[in-house]
View (tube, rainbow, N blue to C red):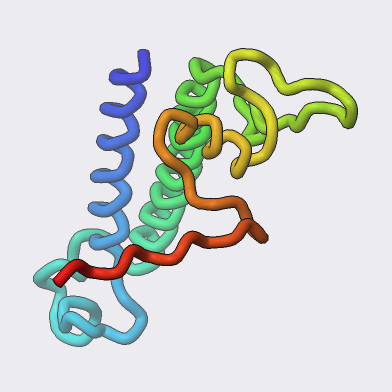
Length: 136
């Protein structure tokens, strides 16, 4: 269903681009609109009829674009389970032990448990042993 809606959405986008490009610009920036005889792009429809039809088509296509965009968003989020960044970041209550699985506690405690097998740096405030003098 989502693939069909994406294809419809892309067709609407291409139609919207085409309708917007057919409209006559106010400033005549591309030189296609208005000034000369009845030929060319400006002779496609009469001035007033063209403005009404293209404006209405633009509004309808824009509305369809928004509807398909919202439908695609709803479809994409409905299949995903809601998650929170706070799941699993809940600290243990004071006086309780952290769970045995290595979860819980703050980040520093978790890192210390992960590095439990490796030699650790001396604790803060502990005397630092002097480096051995080089042999000559």
